[in-house]
Image (cartoon, rainbow, N blue to C red; front, side, top):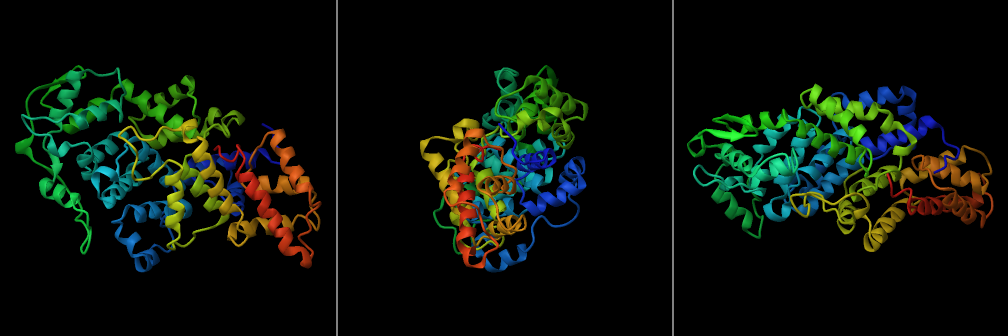
Amino acid sequence: MVNRNLTSELGLMSHLLRRAGFGANPDELDSYLVQGYEATVEQLFKPGDSPSLDGEDLIRRYHIDQNSLMLIESSQAYWLYRMINTKRPLEEKIALFWHGLFATAYGKLNHAKAVVNQTNIFRRRGLGHFRTLLVELSRDPAMIFWLDNKDNHKGAPNENYGRELLELFSMGIGNYTEDDVKSCARAFSGWTMANAEYMSIRASRDSIWPHGRLDWQFQYRPEDHDDGEKMFLGHSGRFNGEDIIDIICGHPATAWFVANKLYNFFVADVPDESAIQQLADEFTRTNGHIESVMRVLFLSDFFQSDKARFAKVKSPAELVAGTARLTGSHQFSDWSIVNLAMDTNYMGQEILNPPSVEGWHTGIEWVDTGTLVERVNSAAQEAGDINQPGVRAIVQRLRSRGEYLSPKELVEGCLELAGSIQVTSATFDHLVSYASEEGSLRLAQQELTDCSEQRVADILQLIVATREYQLA
């Protein structure tokens, strides 16, 4: 990789905001650069009391489907709108991380709002203690329905939730036995949904009208809980669900498991055992406080190094939301954002509807011959619209750099303003060669304005189609 006409501070800040959020436009980057890297990290953790979104009351008034959140398409569009416009980017990004780990899908629930409610748990608890998150998730009706804990009874245990809690949510295969799974299931008997049978019938009906579906509620039934003696991970007692979670969170395997997942999502697709151990040590030291682990991650040398930049394939949600955030599109949630949400589906990531309990296969598996075309087309369509406010802002910034811009200066400026994109020498030379076909850029001449502005949009379209832009 080569760095062309980019300051190290700008490159690092752009890297942070791609990973801790969904990127930033040039104006946002300017404000973050003034306060510095470490202060920006703290602001991401402590964004203040301001609402995460402006104008949410207008969504409630003018967009009935996104207000009710009964339809999966509307719910997907609403979350994408949040990703694009949030003033709390890390809160939204950590919600996406946990959604991929605690993968709960509309496909089985047939109740979009129940999955949306689960993502609200991730926003509230996603940076707190892992124990608190697990307890609240274990009481979440969407999870109870998804992994059949509503069918887990005293004397007739259902092991689905207990097994996935250990295998996919906290420890990983090899760190527990089948007997541990059985004891875990027994401990969570009685953790169910209110009116579970009735709610199952309602969820199976095709129509959500005229009154929609009722919100599901958690209910603990002590008479249905197995209060007998249990052996779990070397401990014995008359354990309930919270006792099981305490034991899980104190196990060394959990610290490594969570640290590995955080590293894979926020740092690199290829693991680094030394870096993961640093995160695991902080997890142990703070009793599983995720914010503390994430602070170590963002301030670490392994995160800030040049090697870590552009080392991850963007997920479809990251690509679509990041491009829209750059171009300034969908600043108000009009109906067309549903089409943008469909783009993520076509790229292989149906948010709120992961393919299985193990979530999505990430990294290079995001890209194949079909999804690559969707990724390029979606990003290019956004970046090529000269009427988008973010694209116009980039044009104005280029205009302020002088009456004439050489093809090289045009490409360098667009790469910088598109998020400090670092491209290979070969890619850079190809971009300059294309820009050179029409000579220097003259944004100051009124009679050439339309043509010159479109040239900027054309270069932006090529940039978002590059391999480097598809990486985070």
